[in-house]
Image (cartoon, rainbow, N blue to C red; front, side, top):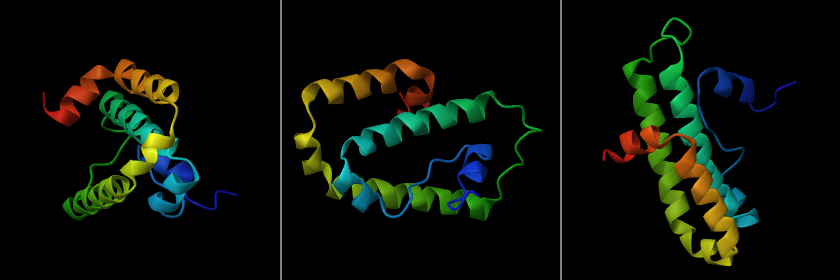
Length: 112
């Protein structure tokens, strides 16, 4: 059984935290970097999927998703000092994975 709705999240190309992002980042700050990697992967898959596979989002749903992203980023920012505890090699490995997976998505997200 899917207690946290993960299957539905995958079907709709969403990345969600189980419980609060703050508590998860306190357990392992690397999860912050993984969050960005998974967001890039899901955004790429959403862009590549056929429109008939994914129903269009309603305006309210898009607004809720944007609010959730802002909340997560704010919580991550409050925990940024915890990133100092991650070995440099681990940070570099995760950043390489983020940048090399789908650079076009990162360019779109950063608007560069």
